[in-house]
Length: 146
Image (tube, rainbow, N blue to C red):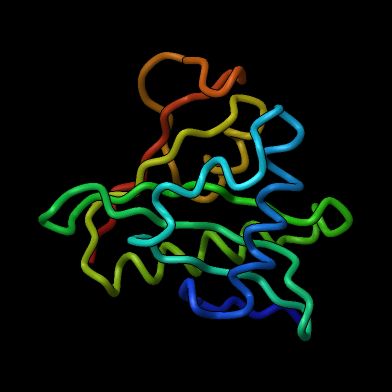
């Protein structure tokens, strides 16, 4: 059974999270390993565990000093486990955490080819498609009613 756990950078699972992000997100588009960690120290990290095996992760970055806006980044699920609902569980847990924390909005830059996934979870698309790290993306957001 999959369980979601919030971790910090001192947790041994953080190193496994970093490896998964490199493998699933960065290497396929030519970004050097550990090249997208500039927000890690002040972000909230969530991992999906199947027993002791880390099978997914997502990061939530605070965007403003008021603590109202945040950005979902670095969502990754091991390629052998994709399609099992692990990503949905991660996002649902992250949204629940954001509501309890008092956040009002979650933004994200979704790859255009997976924006439907986020739409099904309640995110709305806004603005025009744009390129980020050489890949087509769209802006998406969810307003939280706490």
